[in-house]
Length: 305
Image (tube, rainbow, N blue to C red; front, side):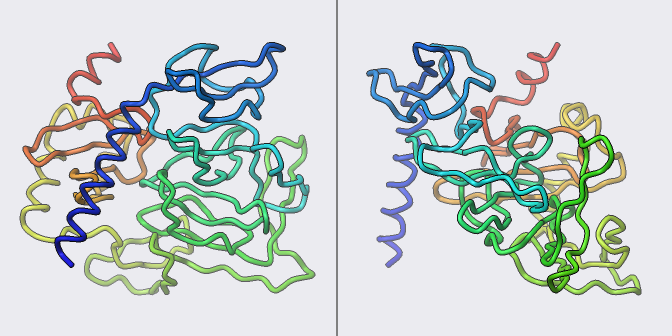
């Protein structure tokens, strides 16, 4: 059994390396209206079903691990409902052209990655869930609306509808009088958690959720991980990377090494950037954002100057 798992891990690692070595290029249709992706041999990887909106120009190489395109593949759509909070008009692909999920439409684009996860919408049901950027479903899409992750928690709502504010630019959710209202606090694993009014050791006050105390979701497993976080917190390059974050907010281990991804992924609570930190087995530090290939942290910071 152990040997089988080891062989599978090596196989997955090979597939990931192969996908990253495959050169991909954006292409635009002759009329200039649609875009897709081809490999270096001219094979279409992602059909040109998507409007020319995005970050790449015709013929530009795409190095991203995941590809967010505006629009949905031919034959797939979710009609807009002005009262439904969950809506998507975007598609996230892996580098082989496989659809991973449909990210929630937020701020005129695909939902941001926050604490190593983002919200997605099931176009068949119009419901919302939470997904790892590379496609693993964390919370199934069974809710009308989900808030962004904060300290490992979300609020999941059912029985709500969209209410557009004056001017039409902003909206909020309000109870739908025709359905049963429900608001649940879930952790990143999708488990329901009840808050406490009284503070206990290590509990975190979730003022943005319901002003109750919740147990910390992100925990260190041993002394080794505690020393790692302490070292990271004291590193000046790391402080520069997260310079927009609150100085008293903690650093979290979001992901631990696996056979196919042998790195720690570390984020900063309530950060105002989309950057993460990778630590390899030798202790070297890298910049990471789930899109671009990881880059040595010093080299990344120098590239910003």
